[in-house]
Length: 225
Image (cartoon, rainbow, N blue to C red; front, top):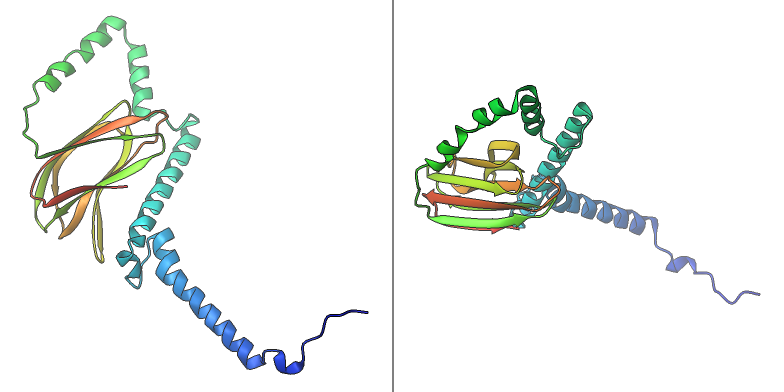
């Protein structure tokens, strides 16, 4: 009635062969987990292979983005307002509403001369770039331990979240983090020989332009997509 032939016993794999295949599959899965999945998704690199393949850096960025998203969600739940409305803006609006218009104008006026009187600095490099809503980017400097770099960056059209950090094989450090910041400046001193720089992310609803200016002791500067 049926034309299909049942396999004979000799053609079927033995229990020993099945067990060996299962063991090999488990070992392969463990190797992939340790060498690829952990560095790429969680920034955990016990073997060092992820750092060589640049997977660990990807995992660290994913962890940072996940932490930012969780912090934004927690802030929104506490404030009961949209994430993109920074607390500083709300506080300023409340302060201006509490005082007469004439006094508010007088209080804001002294800030303008301070910006105009800022000393002119001759920068070594200037790197402008645009971030769309939700986009992030990173710029790194190659520095030796103890080297110092003077920097200044400003955001046009909004605010960004940032993380000033450094990394090298087997080493990582975060110097400073900020949320909803429109500018920053200072001196970055390398804690060890390696890559040191900034990561920015646009959490707003519109495109922003970031301009980074640097000068000091570094041999290379590059933008990491």
